[in-house]
Structure formats: C-alpha cells, structure tokens
Amino acid sequence: MKVSIVFYSTYGHVYQLAEAVAEGAKGVSGAEVGLYQVAETLPKEVLEKMGAIDARKAFDHVPQASVDVLAESDAILFGTPTRFGNMAGQMRSFLDATGGLWKKGALIGKVGSVFASTATQHGGQETTITSFHTTLLHHGMVIVGVPYSCPELSEMGEITGGTPYGATTLAKDDGSRQPSENELAIAKFQGKHVAEIAAKLA
Image (tube, rainbow, N blue to C red; front, side):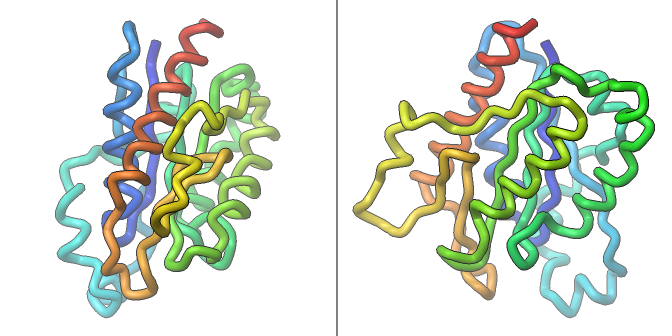
C-alpha cells in the first residue's frame, strides 16, 4: 500500500506538518510512505525578497512530485499554505496538470486528504481545505479528514490549529511561529488515520 504526501511549503511550516503526517502513516503495517514537494513557480529573486530561501533549505532533499506519483498511490495527503482562503498557486498549478489522470479515471477510489497552514487563526484554515476537496471529488477520490477521536482537536488551553477537515498550523504573518506539539500531533494522527482507511479499502 503506497501512501504519498505531496506538499508545497514556503517557509517550512507545511513541510513540518508533512513530516508528522509521514510519521503517522509509517506506523501502519504495510504502508510504503513517500514524501514529495510540488515545484516552485516563483523566481529566486522573489523568494529572496520574501525571505524564504534559507527556510526552504530544510527540505531541498525532498524529491519533486509528478502526476505519476498520484496514479501510483493508494492514498495521497496534500499539504498547502493558504492564499486568501484557498490553496497556494503552486499547488493549483500542479493539480491543473492532472487532466490526463482525470480523463483516465486514474484517481477514482483512492483516498485523498488535505492539511494546511495559515498566517492567522481565522485566515482560511477550513476554507482552504474544503475548497481543495472540490478538486479531489472531481477526481473521484474518497475524502478523509480528522475525526474527533483525535483528542488534540479539542484542545482549548492554547491557540492551536487543527480541524476535522485536516491538520493545520498557524505561522503568524511573518512566518515566525512554528508548528506546536498539539498541531504536529494532529498531523501525525491524520497520517495514521488515512493510511488505516486506505488499508481497509485495499
């Protein structure tokens, strides 16, 4: 059973979630887990002005995703930052290249799940994930979120990301806040839960 985690990360927050998702998925017997990053579309000069170059070095080693990876997977977890309540343009560009898979029905019946980051607590965490689901439904995927059997979803003692639609983190508008232990625990739960569902459907 192949579980693929396909993410785009600007400052490393989504990458950290992706690592936690992978850790959770690897805990499921028979799961072969792969981590892939979506190609950057911004010029290096723009990334330098954004202060993103150094942060991105942490995941330079992660191979680039291709649409073939999706077709070969039993479950796919997508990670994206939020851009005005929607997925990042880099992820949108990647998904827009999957028309051939759609035409062949290559993703029908595969498990799909989404996790995300936002700058602020109410910066579109839920809309980013639920709007992402529209593309997965067009591909005929089986959408899986995070059930409330994940205790960290009910944490009220601190500001935290995490939704029943998927794991999330809060990055602050300058990217200085890093994923919390609670947020990473939700991401790990999501990876394990998705892999378990995929195993049942295999």
